Length: 145
Image (cartoon, rainbow, N blue to C red; front, side, top):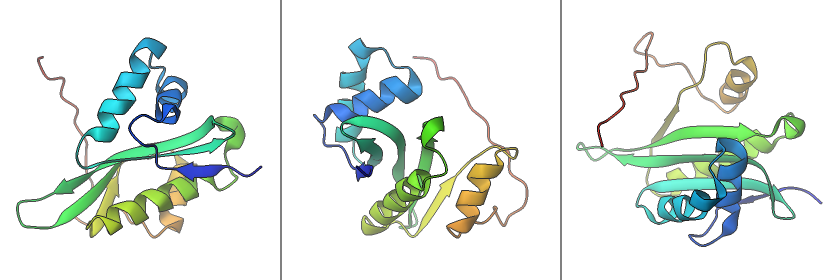
C-alpha cells in the first residue's frame, strides 16, 4: 500500500501520533497539543501515513502581513529515515505549498541547515531559491511565560 498524504482534522489521532514519533511529545500531551494546533487559525499540517502509521510530516503557518501579502512558512519537515528517498518529503512539501497557495499565500519560506544537502536538493528541485537579500541568520528567543 502506498503512503497517503493526509491533512489531519482536529480530532484525528494521526497528528498526535506523528508528534510522538517525530518530536517525542509524551502521549499524555500529544492529543491535546495536536488538537490545539489544528484548531488554531492559520496553521497547516500534513502527515504521510500508511495504515495509520506516520512515516513523515510537515507543518507550518500562513503569515498575513500588514501590507496585505500572505506568505506561508514551513516550520518542520521530517520523513522517517527508512522512508527517505521515496518521494514522501516532496509530496509533503507540495501538499503544504498547494494548501497555503489555496489559502492566499503568494510566497513560502523555510529554513534548513547549510549542511543538509538532501533537504537543500529537494527544496531547489521544487523551485526554491536562497534568500535574494544576501546571507541571513536566524535567531531564536526563549520567551518568559
